[in-house]
Image 1 (tube, rainbow, N blue to C red):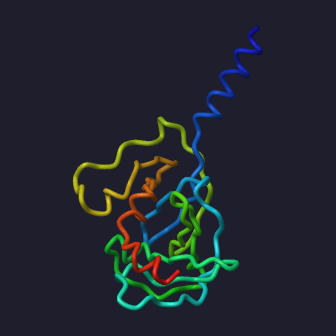
Image 2 (cartoon, rainbow, N blue to C red; image 1 turned 30 degrees about the vertical axis):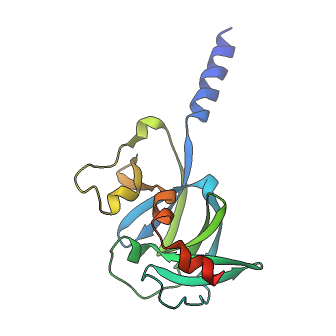
Length: 164
């Protein structure tokens, strides 16, 4: 009977863990739910979209599908930097759409329990913090967990759909 309880306890703990792909934008570390990530690609040639907002870099062809590319640095008001060999596009699903997110580099896949995640700070709502679902603690690091729907929802879909 004790064995069944420990197995049950372990399975509940495993279920309570959520996995996130972590990445960097400058010195800041962010996470996206791993179930939303389709793939990670090297930064390819991106076709610009005329008259699009600065954070929409353009579109890319992904196996016959036109995928809009958003630059998270620009989206979050961070300074632009030159792309390096570590710059990648994280291809994610947002509802029924597929979107590419330009990030400086990818770090790890980490699992967090509910006790490791705190609500986002209330200090600067209306800024990039409104794109967060929470802050995860891992060792000595704080990882900002992205609300990817909110990031993509606020983009100008007309320009992206016209390009597609």
